[in-house]
Image (tube, rainbow, N blue to C red; front, side, top):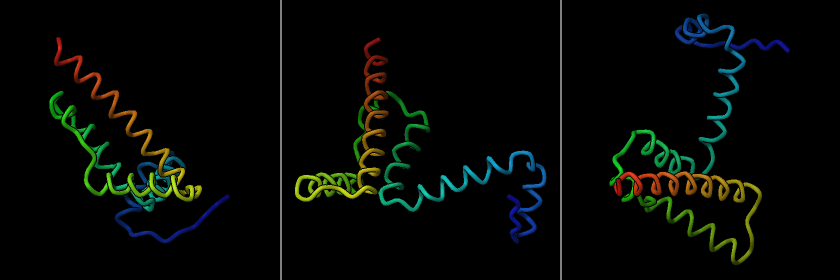
Length: 116
């Protein structure tokens, strides 16, 4: 399917050098756009950005959820106990579990590094 859109000239110039990658660019952009609209995305992004910054082993071990993220987690836990979660809340919970898994791996590796 062919789609025609109006975009600013500055963006058009940047896209011209990547015409063979346009499909991938749009797909990645849509994914990020959808993710950014999810409640909790910003809190999770902060954790991932922290890890991407290559913190020291001590900084990784000291990592704790932000107050906002902890509140979101607590609200989901309470709602799950009392009435159950909606599909979108289940998805959000799954993303929290995934990031927690990554943080646990990072903390385990940081502890190993400190013991050596």
